[in-house]
Length: 195
Image (cartoon, rainbow, N blue to C red; front, side):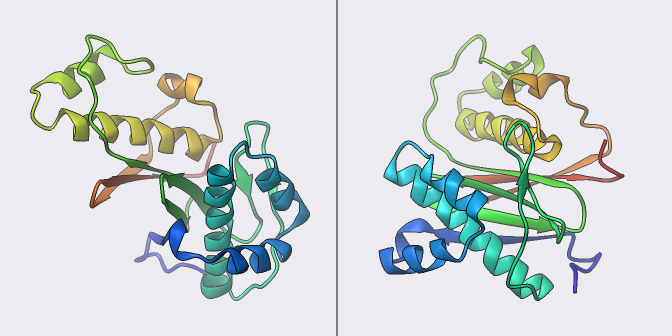
């Protein structure tokens, strides 16, 4: 079973604080060794919990959408995870983790919006993006995170590095922006075969 064309993508979301320590420990043991190793390598308990929550969502989605209990995972040189079963992208911010499944190559980024200081230049942003963010103080925070999540989602789509974000092609990429509460999620899907 796979995602229907009309579905385009499916978002699985979890509040990491809603998962008990026992549930994390139980599910941790059932994950592939390569994922367990990556979770253990995280610097803080919060980042370990965020990473674990993302992989719990991956496991749940693969089971519900594709009818599989086991799955293989590999990582490219920049750390992008992949499986032969489906296209997916994991992201987390603060207490929220998401896993996005698509019938196409996909990249996703979620960020909790917070107050930013207006600047004449933002690192990694083009002059046009800076002008868009700063066009008026009202709404600048949301515009900043729209631009930032779009860049991150594109980087994840291509399996690249954030430092390369301005060199990546947006041609044949569809972007979807979703927001809820103080969080913004950008999903980037490749229209054609991935480069």
